[in-house]
Length: 279
Image (cartoon, rainbow, N blue to C red; front, top):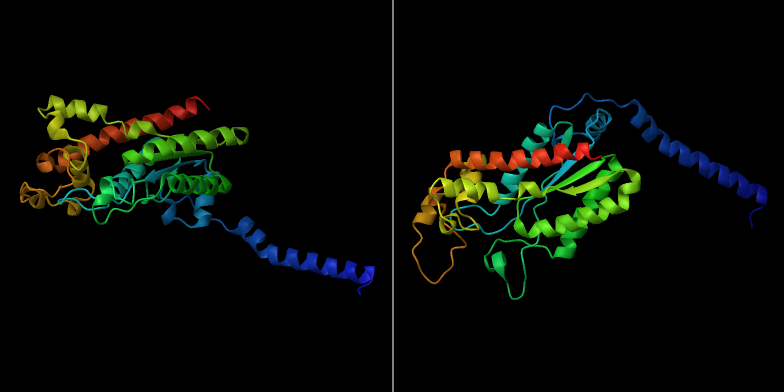
């Protein structure tokens, strides 16, 4: 049985060992430096560069969410990821002092058994809403721990919007005392202005549709033209098998997509900029 003196010596040795093991990390944090990175995407930075950006005032971060889902026979499954990934970078640069987290690809897509919605089509990958909410919360908590003050959810997929809004509202309430805001940037997904423009150009609500049609296809053509092959859609013959398309994507063009995406990017950037006026 150890005497009190022996226990005291062991305690002191353990404390010294703990300090010694932590010292290199503490010194690294104080001595390592890096210039401000010339990119805004966290995945392309070292942790030292991320710290430099935070110290320079880059305390706003965008969390883009996409989705892996069927987009008709003419468009790749990763449509949402490509569009929101590039849009988020442009939004961050427009807002200024803003960074971008990696795109969240796995989002709610409906029921599994029996498969419903997009999950009726092979290749679609979905999460239950509570799981998606947990993923968002984990990302937000990580960013908060890293020093970010304003966390912005931007989603390119309809079923993600409500979950994102709920998580953002709850975390903002919980973290208000810490000066941390989590915000759902709903202006990005609001397509009323896009539809109004297309109607003015002679399209109809039927041709505009709701999925994998003019807007989606045009936007992907503008950011990743290799992801679209309209000849595959034109070859589709009417039959019993659903195509996964609502509307008419055959009139989609890269130019139209660039213009439509510009509208969403401007709206989202304006909403984020307005946050500073209310903080």
